[in-house]
Image 1 (cartoon, rainbow, N blue to C red):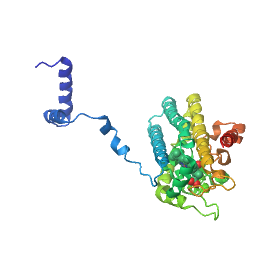
Image 2: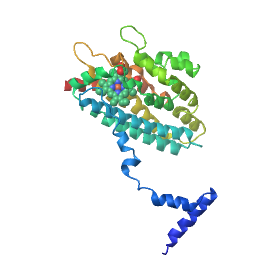
Image 3: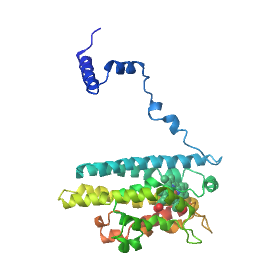
Image 4: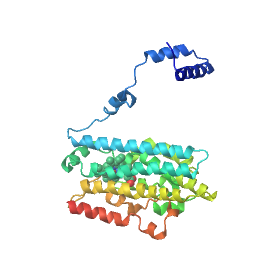
Length: 321
Ligand code: HEM
């Protein structure tokens, strides 16, 4: 049998590769000979993936709720994958930073556009029943979502807005005590921390504080400021950062809020949120003014953060009934 020059060349390269590691190439070729062909379903662990949906009730629409949360968490993982690459890049160039931010923006835009799967895709009657079996779990407890926020900005920008000035030069631990989301998760009636929050902190507080410390001078805002102070051209980067701010702090929160209004607004009384929050006061972006990059917006934009949008969302939902 004759081997083509291409095959001979590959064999020589393989021989070199294995020799360098003190390995016997023939044994590896045997391995190749006996190995099964890779299948699609094994490669992406399809059977495992499709076995991860375990409803707590017999209502069919609970499956949709579970799967859409899982899809969202996978997107969050894609976002975090880019966050890790940006913060690890040595040296980080505006070009690479911008390209990776574009990917993150695409992921968030896909999530925002697909949120109708929640808003219109489940029967309200089923939702209101199966959610009672899920207490006190809530999407509020998405650790990945909170990690994305920590990568995106200086920790101080995640502190409740009336505490920012006071805590500006304090440690990450001190700032964490007043991170904005703790305020959302207090019980309506007693003002105490909800069980949803207590459990979330027990699992993730250390992870968030450690990440906050690691990202102190290595988050997107800090990295942008470092590039800018070096005189690098950052115009395109600024556009992507502003888009990210809008995607994470206005657009996604608004479509999400729309689902809360759709399912939890019921005259005359409001339906309690699964996490026990005062969600009407907590979820609308205009109340909390979470803004990753305050230095990139003008005064009017900061003043009107999320405002017109919230009014529109409420009107749309009212019109639908
Ligand atoms: C019908 C669909 C949904 C409704 C009615 C809903 C409702 C709520 C409510 C009321 C809260 C406030 C916390 C609480 O009291 O539980 C919340 C928070 C949250 N939910 Fe959802 N949610 C829905 C779908 C989703 C999905 C698909 C995700 C994706 C992971 C998600 C992620 C979150 C996150 C990250 C928070 C915290 C937001 C923040 O702190 O500003 N939710 N949700």
